[in-house]
Length: 213
Image (tube, rainbow, N blue to C red):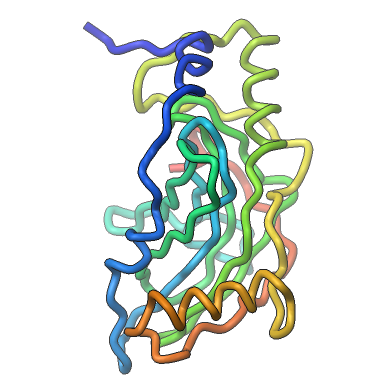
């Protein structure tokens, strides 16, 4: 039997409180001299769980890179009334913010107006603070208006986004980055002070099946 979810079930989840994700950032080590790169993002609060998705990106062709070993990079937040730092260690290269989804069933695709960035081996980069509220409200409204209130688990329906990803652009002296540096000093000793702000560029990308992989 397929497991189904409804908008009413989503509303029921508003009463649930998830575990804080700051421990996830602490648990990921990143030694000096690594050939990979470290990403840290502050995910804003939300009563329902949500996922911010990044994909490897080809900036010359404006396409997402797909391959057997080139899966999306997901940052999971929500289920809490507190913002949460979440980290991932990834392969170096160019990436694009591709989508946000709620409960891995309904999502917004940022293909028309988003941001790209590049990370190099050994770099630790802060992506800023992502604020999900407008996106999640739009997802719920669009699903209700279209009658798409029932979905199969892990079968995401993506809608076109009419606003770009709501994420800050950190700089050396911005409040979000200074807070991230304080968090680094207190909770991320493996970085040894290497955290630096991301450098974003505007981007768009051609969609593939279901918007993303």
